[in-house]
Length: 211
Ligand SMILES: [Zn+2]
Image (cartoon, rainbow, N blue to C red; front, side):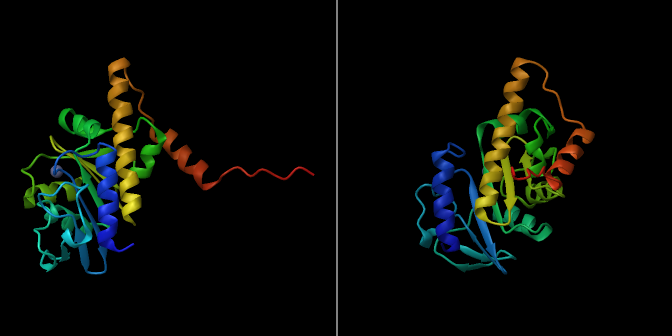
């Protein structure tokens, strides 16, 4: 699948799963010095490959008729400061709830390790601005995900599939935490408990064959 076809595929899935509504949310995928990104003002389930602009890593339009997403500066800032090859940004409900009420998403489940543990909430700035791009870049340091205050969430991956799955995981973790808060006081995993998970994952148990 071409980069632009991937944007259409995962754009459709983002809408189907209710991670975005209207024309909100944007995705990008990088190959070398080029980045294919979703266009501004088009619902993610209405995309065709030709609609998706291609920019270089400095933000110059290389291909396409439509304007790149207004969050393209944020995508480019994250590409510049991480090893990301794909980025997904949505306004998913529980992610936005956490980003509106808290300064971080603590690790309430060990799967948070897949995103780098605690997920930080980037300080608020107007959408599409270099300030927001800088805030997200800072919050993303050493992580695979960040939340954006009063806005939404963003995840990175080695592929668009990976970045998309991280967005689903981020939303799930936020939902577990928010629902947990409505029932009681969620327990936060300690560094020791998280380190034990990493240890376990690095040394999986072996099951000898029955003789
Ligand atoms: Zn947004």
